Image 1: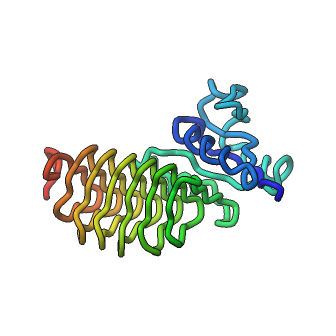
Image 2: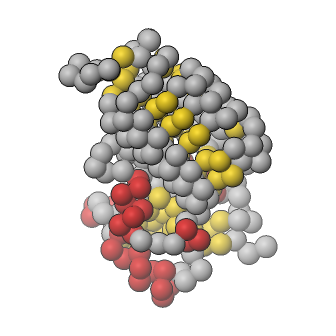
Length: 220
């Protein structure tokens, strides 16, 4: 089997995590370069992979040097207005160009994964369900029965969902966050590190604490 060339959008920490995963899948992926708009990174290496230039070079690379390449968006920041989905929309690639990367130590239980989704080591999805496009789940995330995960969601390490949780588009769940069954996390909401979420979090709000509450200046 000939591995498919892979281009990374972003050259930060998430890109390094993705590289570590794809190098365990040498028959599937061949990382050939990264793109990042930080000029100081151009011409350098990220864990042995060259940073080829800025994002504006992506169309030419796909047309000329790497016409068969897949692309994975390694931008972890889910804060508005810089969201992964905004960037994906700006790049304008069809879904078949986006790589879905699943670490070999992740358990998906037959889940349907959207284009561009990344699941890192130790992620567990306990029953078949659908996960949206361009979702990122860092190590040891737990997604359980009847959960709904929308496009662009970011799970930091060890975030866990009880059953029947809904997570809206581009929401961010911090490291170690716990969400009780049946709770809804609104689009663009941010759940802080170690938070215990016992009630619905409205769209666009930031909640933190045990139990989680809206931060000062945001109404419940």
